[in-house]
Image (cartoon, rainbow over all chains, first blue to last red):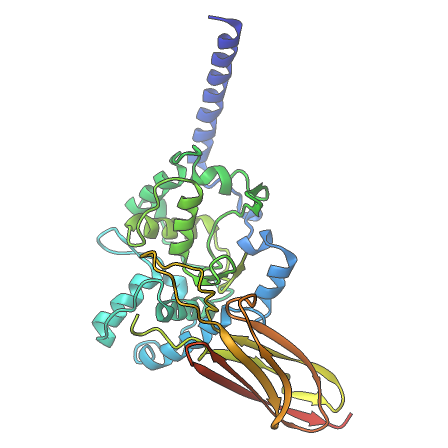
Length: 257
Length: 115
């Protein structure tokens, strides 16, 4: 063994030792990387201009979708739900069959079972308007996290996906959002990745989009296989992100560059 | 999509409800419009036909405040701010028309009190 190779083996074994200790302490602190006191919403990583645009409802283009969603809610939803406030905090939730019900899926269920209308198309204008209005109505409230969430199969699936090294660039979600937040990649600030601002108006999209769409953009950015919008792993991840956010309040519709 | 709204039908015209006579204030207009440049393609690879807001105007009680012909440098969902001072109360009315002939309008009232 050359000295160079020997050095490399030594470093590898040191790394393995650190990883093992890390894994042990993580299990003890329920797998969360970022302490609750260090949790910051995505908008704190954006520029002052974008933050100002998000905070002022007169400037926030996402409010156009909120206005439309308010009309749709008044038309179709008020028979069952007197008030939209707090509805979005209950989603995403666990279904009895172990799958995750996102806000979009819940609306589809309400439409086909209660309102008896054809379901809105995913990423279509009416569904985005309704989800944005519901999230907006729960602004400032934290999403509910089920007790023992880490024991659910959905959490485990999402956790595996979040920590799985994948793609051409050879990294996982954790590499950026748990370990490198605040730094920059491709001239963009890396956030902690909670999604509490979604559905959000992204200037890049020139319109408002769902967290589902944003997550697919993450996979694209990682240069890995982009899951289809209907792939259950995206719903699992949305559920997982709520747990990661540790009670961070909803601030939709956020504005992103 | 069949339940897609007509572009440009949805807008916000924001004015302060009460201003002093002669005092400058902002009239903010936000229009939901894709401002299709004609350069983009859809998922099938077909070109999305150009559709820009052609004309934009704001008037106060029939008196013109602002008129413009907009082109493709204007962003999707355009946001415009006008600085105005008034002598008496009245109603602002904004109108616009896109290249597919979809017209939109919105109005908002301002009450003016003596300075």
